[in-house]
Length: 171
Image (cartoon, rainbow, N blue to C red):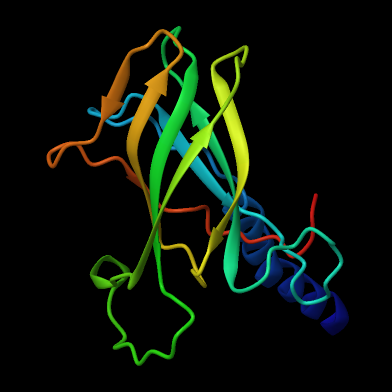
């Protein structure tokens, strides 16, 4: 009788933890904001720096990201400009603050281009040099294949944080 009670307690105590782990791994792309022409999803990629397994791994400190852009209308993305914010690899002493009060000391602006792409979604794997952790990504501008474009202004903030899940190996 005691053995059954112990097993039942272990099972009941472990069930919420397992459920929480399963639901924590489901991420959805953030919708395009009121002023944002596209939705952006950023995911960390495994970079293999613990054991150098790739010949094409860039030298130095940086982050691999998989960026996915979703277009709500019929246009096709030709080029985007983003700014990635995060801490550099220099020594820091940082006061423990809420995440909203944290500030990045390094920004990297990247321009990504695509050829003609069918569908409403485009993605690209990018290496962001000099940043040890990506805190946020700003969408600064988008150029569409029809010649139109969009540029962020002070009142139009298109900012996302990468998914918190970081893989240790490729899928």
